[in-house]
Amino acid sequence: MNLQRVEELVRELLIEVGEDPNREGLLKTPQRVAQAYEYLTSGYRTDLSEIINGAVFESHANNMIISRDIEVYSMCEHHMLPFFGYCHIGYIAKKHVLGLSKLSRIVDFYARRLQIQERLTAEIAGEIMSVTEAEGVGVVMECRHMCMMMRGVEKQNSVMTTSSVLGSFREEEATRMEFLNLLNRKIA
Ligand code: ZN
Image (cartoon, rainbow, N blue to C red; front, side, top):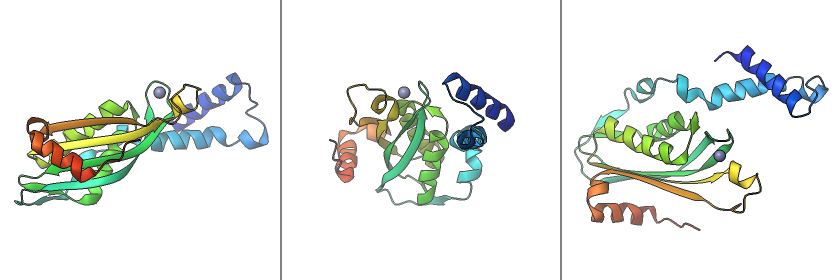
């Protein structure tokens, strides 16, 4: 990412919204915004295989692995405003399991770019499926969207829930129910 170019764009944006980019409080704002965007969109420039490398372990136990309440912070591609909440992941390993921290790294990898919640959920599920060659994967995500909350749309407190199920989580109702029961979701 060309930081200097982004700084120029942010300066222009400040002028267009009616600000004076030369007033004291805003002098370093373009630089800060550019650095923030570089971080928040770092998923575009990250090599996921490097993140996962070495954290896939052999396992022949065939039980369901659940990781709840992984924090998610992303930005909607329609308004470039944040959406954030929690991601819950379950999978049934056939031969490989992932180190626990890697699940969050996968979430961050897909969240740090412009997204819609549905696609983010599906991409995380697909990635875990392909990395672990699991028997099945389920991902549930519950997020609040600033573009809805800040812009005076009625649903200010609503949480959007999305899910993606693959393999046995899609094909077998009992497996899917076990996953949802284990999550013990409380959806408002
Ligand atoms: Zn939006």
